[in-house]
Image 1: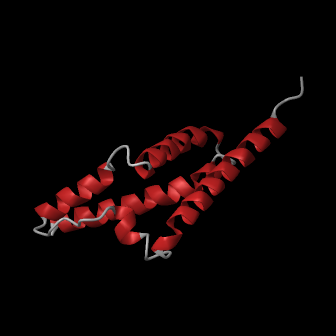
Image 2: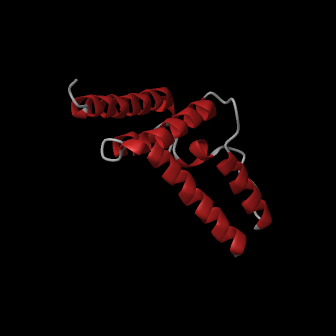
Length: 121
């Protein structure tokens, strides 16, 4: 039971990270300091999408599932819970581009608001 609960917690954390990745740049409009963690999250997202590294949350999920007596899934988190569930798999590239556009929009808005608030010299 404990490892199943841990697995559920990891899944919630994974979804939370994805939500922060997509929308976290808008938090910087209110809290300027939050742009730095969002830049790090976006960088990590690029590393994962480019398949330059494995996601540690996916690894932790596999580990906890095995400890709970379950077999580890053969697909990654996105493949199992996002693609084909939230949108058809054939739109993956389009969705990735839209997410990138949303992130760039949030950063552009952050820079615009920051510049607008800067004292005139």
